[in-house]
Each structure stands twice: as structure tokens, then as C-alpha cells.
Length: 467
Image (tube, rainbow, N blue to C red):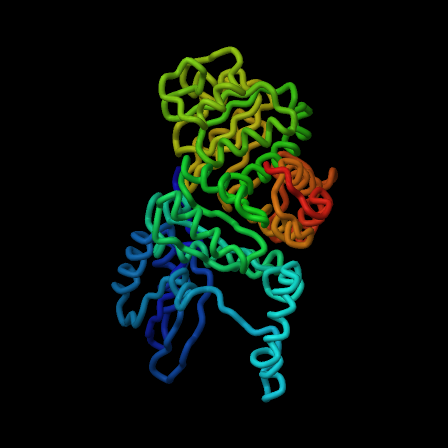
């Protein structure tokens, strides 16, 4: 699938050009001929002889950006001073910071915020530990924990390289739900060490968001932490994805006039996200499901089943289909991919039932070209921002944690996840619902509050039954 210029690869080029003549039009012409898009042009300084201009350009990728800069350099009488990658500029020095909520303008305020006044608050919490949620940041804090083993689509790149992603996650928590989130990047991929480290850090937090931990380790880490801690533990790669997929599928089924209990669903991907999606779909009433991994359909007769795959085999594929993904897609009503790019094509989608629904969520390139899928499917969704129906976890996790923190919940249940999905789906009104609008924008003002309210109501105070 051909890529298009994107703000993700936006550059700003500082140029010195002659004050007169056609330099500016030449710049625009060269950029457009090279396949870029000029999104801004600002005069930085002006003189009688020369102008210093900042030209911002959307490009396809790093190589494309370098090619455009090289083309600009060849224009007569133009000098390049600097080429800046705008994404890297945004990350300089990190994207988040800590700020005090109280003034510290004089000795009196200092003595209340810190010693000696703070000692009285500490003693009050020692006498009644429940007061920690009322008197400290714990009531509004989430730890975003990773071991760097499955970062975005980049794989096992380690804790330092994961930090920009965890910072971004923390920024999203604050922007969309007013939650103070803290990146915790662990320099270990040992399950016991991860569990113990999070356990001893937990007193400072009201919730734990596990992030970008590879399967199958992520399943055990989450299970053990849920047993040990009295605060919610939520692996977003699993449950955030599942919430968004169920919400999107709920609305997509409304578009095509089908019911979740009667459709045939084929899934590609049996890892963390795929397993969580499967379980939540089954909780919502899905019955006819086949899950495929790189070896084909998961079924009871396979000789390579670990505990997670065994669970899938025991609860899906009742007919015992043992073929490949293409065969599993034939006559399906729904395809959901959380796997790898380019594993299907338009001809495969053509073998699905009428009114087919395709969720191709692999990033950056989906399992099937959205353009090809649209030729045969009634509804198509991806994880990309340059196509309609982007399924993005930011639709779920800020509101989910807002609801959990507000309810002072000590666990996460399937009922809470289902309630979040239902609330998210209902943000799209009947008048708005259509093949190209099955989930709201991440910037829709009601998303986080509606999801939070549903989770808070489902929690009903303290929740103890684990999902």
C-alpha cells in the first residue's frame, strides 16, 4: 500500500532566499514535484537582500524527507541553514513534567506542604491507611509499566527506547482524563522481577497500566499482580484493544443488520490483544469463532498448544477446522486482524458473506489493503489515522481508568470492560452511524466521560471479581 505524506514525518527547513524574484514559488514547486506537501511557510527574518524562511513540509518517511531537502538545496541562490524533524523536536527534553498543585510562596505554605506540617498528615494515614486515597496523589495516579519487550510494532527494543512511548501514554492520560500517569520502564524481562517490582511500587498508585509487555509473559504478569494488589491492574494492549473492537463491532453490526450471536467471526492473531478481544466478544455473546495464528487455525488437534492457545482451542472452532487463514475467512461475516501486514488480499475478502465487516488493525500496514477490502466489505476499520474508522486504544483507557479511580475499585471485571465498550459505541448516535463512522473521534468531548461513567457504575464501589 503506497504511503502518503504525513505530519508524522513532517520537517521544517530553514532557508535563506533572495528577497526578490520567484524563490518562494520555486520552493513550493520543487516540494510538490518531489511528492511532499507544504503545510506552512513563515518568514523568520527579512532584509533588503535576503529572506530567512521556515518551510514546513509533510513527507512520506525519513528517506523522502532527505530527498526533498536535497532537491531544495539544488535551487540556485538558495541556502539551507537547518533541517529539523518536527517529531523529534516535540520530544526534546521529554513530553511530560511534574507540577505542584499548591503554592509555595512563603515559609507558612512551605511548613504546611512539607515539614513540620506534613508529619500530621503522614500520622493520620498511618492510623487509617484508607486515607491515602483522600490525602495524596494516589487517588489520581496510574503507573504506566513496561519491560520494553513489545513496543508498538517495533518489537523488543528495551526500556530506554520504550520511554518516549510511555511518556506519550502518560500525556494522553492527562489530556483526556485528567489523570497523573508516570512512566515506569523496567530493566528486566523476568516475570518474577517484574511482578515483585510493581508490587513494591504499588502503594503510590491508584492503578497499574501494563503496557507493551510481550505475550505470553504479559498474561502471567497481569494475573499475578491482580492477585497481589488491591488496585486495578489493566493491560491496555489486551483490554483497551478489546473494548475498542467490541464497541466498533457493535456499531458495525448495526450498520449491516446482523447480530453478534449469529455471525461467524474469523480472527488473525492469538497473542495478548487477540486473546483479550476473543474473551470480550464471547462475553458479549459471540459464539461462532475461529482464531488463526502463523500456523493456521487454532484447534484441539494441534501439537504446539501452550496454555493460552489451549484455552482458545477449547472455547472456539467447534467444527475443528484445521486449515489456513484464507480458508477460515471464506464464508465469515467478520474478520478481525491483530497480527501482521499483507496476509490477505481483496480476493480473500470477496469470499466472505454479504455485508462483511473487516477490522484490519495491524500497524503501520494492515492485514489487507483497506482500499481492496472496501471493494468487497460493507464496513472496514483499521488502526490508521488516514482512513475512516480508526480503532485506537485512546478511545478506551483514559475513561476506563477515570472510572476505576473515581470508584476506588480494587479490580477489573469483564462487566466493566463490556460496559465501557457499550458506552463507547453509544457515543455514535443513530443519526451519525454509517459505514465510515462506527467509532467516534478520539477528540470527541464525550468519549472519556461516558466511558468513565459506565465503568464507575459497573464498579459499584469496590470491585473484587477479576476479569
